[in-house]
Structure formats: C-alpha cells, structure tokens
Length: 199
Image 1 (cartoon, helix red, strand yellow):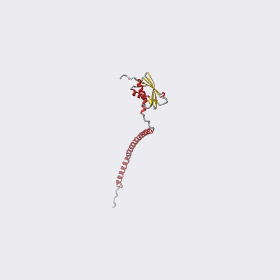
Image 2 (cartoon, rainbow, N blue to C red; image 1 turned 180 degrees about the horizontal axis):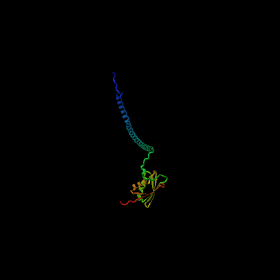
Image 3 (tube, rainbow, N blue to C red; image 1 turned 135 degrees about the horizontal axis):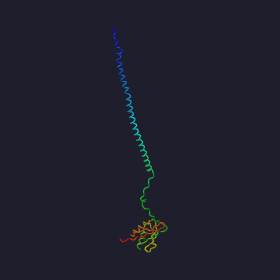
Image 4 (cartoon, helix red, strand yellow; image 1 turned 60 degrees about the vertical axis):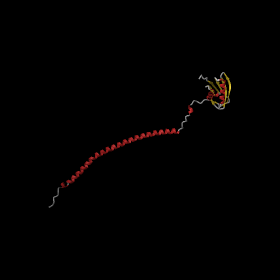
C-alpha cells in the first residue's frame, strides 16, 4: 500500500522559518548601518576638527618663530656691522684735560720776561740763576731793574711754558707769582710776585 506523502506546506515550514530569520537579521543589520555611519561621520568630523585646531596652532607657532628668527637675524646683522666696522678711537686721558698751555719756542730773539714786585735785589739774582739753570735755557740776562720791576732776556734752546718757569721761580724764591701776560708769538712774558701776608 503506497505511503502517504506529507503535505507540501508541512515540508516547507522549516525552510521558510530559517529564511525569515535570515531576512530579519539582514533587516536589522541594514537598519543599524545608518546609525553606525552617522557615528563614524561624527567621529571623523571630530578628528578632522581636532587636526584643524592643531594645524592652526602649529601655523601660529611657525609664524611666531619666523618673526623671532627675523628679529634675531636683524640683531645679528647689527652686531656684525658693529664688530666689522671701525673700532672707536681710544679715549685719551689728556683729551679731558685743559687745553695745552702755549709754549715759548727757541728763536732768533730771546724771550723778554718782565717781573713786577721783585722781592729785592738779592731776590732778582736768585731769579736770574734759577732761569739760567733750566735745561731749556741757554742764558738769562738782567736788562733793567727799577722800582721793584725787572726785565730779563732769556735765550732758549728748547720749548718751555710760562707755567714751568713760574714753578721754578716759586720754588727758588718761596714767593707765589701771577701770570699777567703770555705772548709766545711776541716772545713776551709778564709775571708779578704776590706779597705773602703774615704767617
């Protein structure tokens, strides 16, 4: 007796059930894709924004470093110009001193020294000897002496200043002197002995 075949719909039941499961999984996966892509887009956007911020900071730092290097280059150039330029002239201590005193020079005629308020005849002799003893003087001769005023002619062998002559006369006589007239071009010098007060 022939066997009875199961109904067609009964055999297809498990296959349909499995296919439905696959479709449900595929549908769930498809439904989840837009959400995953949106999250990925947001994440990539955040990453790109962060990279943009970092690049912006790096660009600002590069500009700052560029400005700094430019300033350093300018400073280095100025220093190089100063170093390679002419050195400043050394400061001479004499440049801050008083102007050099005019000197009497040896010449064809002797220097005429007029002395006022000479401290006596003996003082005049001391003056003559003092002048004649200087290294710059070849001879010293008394030309006139009257009323305490004397004239002496001094022949020079080397330049000498009025200050040097006054210092020598002060040391030899003990009397201070004033310089009343200094005319090297005319070979003329006028001095005055100053009277010292008591004590």
